[in-house]
Amino acid sequence: MKTTGPETYRIGDARITRVSETLLTTLTARDLYADWDESRLDAYARWLLLGRPEERRDHVVLSVHSWLVQIDGQTILIDTGIGNGKDRPFSKLFDHLQTRFLEQLEALGVTPENVDHVLLTHLHVDHVGWNTRLVDGRWVPTFPNATYVFPQREQAFYSTPAGASRRMVFDDSVLPVVEANQALTIDERGGNYLRAFTFHPTPGHSVGHMSISLKSAGAAAIFAGDVMHNPVQVYRPEWASVFCADPERARQSRLWLLAQAADHESPVFSSHFPETSAGRIIRSGDGFEWTYI
Image (cartoon, rainbow, N blue to C red; front, side):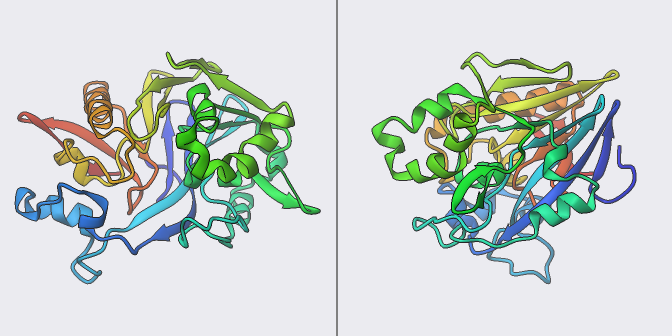
């Protein structure tokens, strides 16, 4: 249920607000989905993917943001975006970015010192960046009083040959948190955290990806992470993004999340959808439909 503004919601006793970092606008639908076939989508589903008619119809808009959750006197961030000033030679989209993310957070009345917990769905470059910031030439935890919680398998991945090409992401955005004794890992079975949150294994996009559900005062919601990148996947869950490490497992995780959200009437707070980035999923015949909220 929307409350004080276009990006603030109440789920039970929790208040949820999107903290935007940037928009990515250079990908086309075919870039994002190897199985892209416009003929398999109705007009509404195409609109969800490509935006309003006055926008560039051949490009997909991906939002990068965090979700701020305030509940039981605690302040929680879910995922932390790309971060500023980080060396990312593998992608000009992320390389030495400069945004006003912390200023936007402070405009909501939250300073870095106020954040009690940081919950991470996975450890990709665009989900861990603001874990740390550069102070006197060193990467240090941005949120000095927070416990950072993330899947253990994600951390272990960076020690494998497959993770070597992105080791710099771990070194500047995760390792400083570990060395500061602010990290807590969730094993591959998932599990509860605090009173309100549960980590659910949803691998495929990455090896240890987890979605995070919230339950409060009889209401529920789910933070989907990168199980889906765009609402078109609600209509075509078989389409995996090109960023998925294991497309088949990603499809299985997506079907689980769609059913979970629809059957439990849980709003979905996405990591990359445009517009409000939040919505509801309902069953429709043998499939599902998406509506922004």
